[in-house]
Image (cartoon, rainbow, N blue to C red; front, side):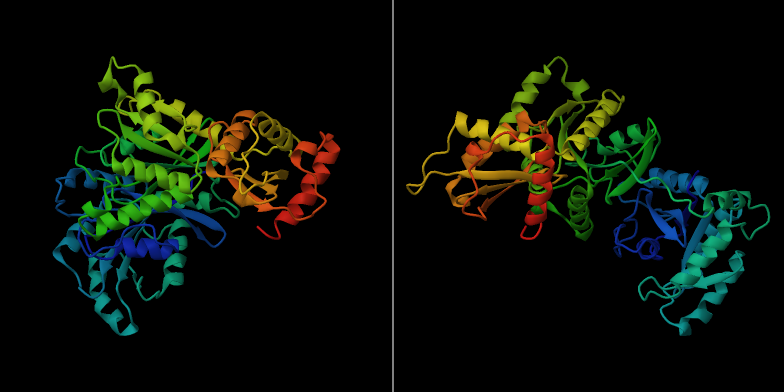
Length: 484
């Protein structure tokens, strides 16, 4: 069952992106006074009563792009119009009818789909009479709204639903067909995995997204900084639904030239926080930069499973992958567990292998281990390499348990967290990662002071039966959640 598409179109600077964010209920698209900020199609799922629609923001029709990407922007607009079931033709209620508005209207008249004329920036009722001149464009009722003042949202959503449930123009077959998608309870499948694709500018992120989606979903250009927003692209593979988040290429903070690039950076970081798995793109033809290191550090701070994706590998023949792998490992010593993938996004080589690897990492980060297995591994690690004395005291681990997943979160009860230095903590994490099948994902580790004086150390805990382990896990987790 397809989700009906509602496309937002209009000339530049009529408030399309503000309207998109307002209807979505959250800040997704970049809003800036500069004309031509939006280039790609930006979409999100929006609930409308008990149903869902896919709302799509587009670039301004007629914009002269400063990077000569006008043709690509126009193609993205046309793709949105082709897929739409209902079109929101946005105009500026305060500015009145402009010549470019009439050109947009002429283009839409030849599309046999419901078109709803939306006069934005009508902040008060006193401005509504000015919007009456938009009736001459020939699209029937003009709905006056204000995204900034939160005015008439309910009416606009009702009109969208009315159009989807049959359309209001003769021959509007797409609107009638969309009615079947608005059957009660028709909600789109939630994505099983959200993938954030991040990296420097011009590393091939958008090409990779298009290859995954098997469609021209985002603009691909040699111009650095083509992508500005974080763009959610839903696609299906092997019966599973995925969400790929294409992000703007990141630059050094001191190199950010304007507010648009600043917001792009902020959205890239937000995309990392939203993601289940992060794909950090590296250009095989370029040296690893400070920006790459900063991104990797941020990914590590967020405890996100990640893959180093080395793109454009076809240009490095006959260099062995091992040489590049050694270079990456030496550059990112704290991320030695992160897998490395070598791809050529332009030809699609190894693209689906990266998707399979991402699924594997997602499974790892959501895995749970029994308390008995965890304490057994810790006992072996402590016996193989006992922690050194600190402050004339011997560090002890009394008990350990897993309290959460994504990331796997472990709590170790000790006789003093300050007795375990960072080096020894890394040793414990490496042992746990290798022995308990968390090989490729980050683990969050908490050290706590013991709660009860009579608690035995982990070296003294006997192996537990499966039943005893389950009881111990439930009892310990109920205690831990109170003070974590």
